[in-house]
Image (cartoon, rainbow, N blue to C red; front, side, top):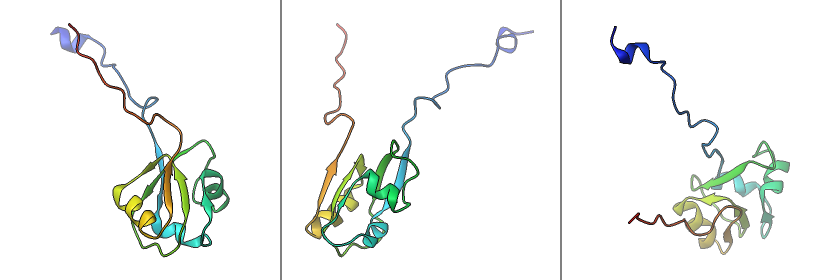
Length: 106
């Protein structure tokens, strides 16, 4: 029997290292009052997020008519444009601000 059939078929699994984000659309932020500061705790109270420790990504699906101060882990480009376009701010929280640069080995 060939070697590749005798060797166990186990290997690396990325499940425990994968980054998972909870998705919140801009249209769901419309339920907050004008000028509100929105963070993960406020999203949890509104029922849009399951846990305080979960990472949140804001997507640009829908329309926004209110000025909101939103703090989340990630924003899509359209979501950030819609929030800033209404006079609000989109701030990133947690994680690294700059991506690490890989150096070439000599």
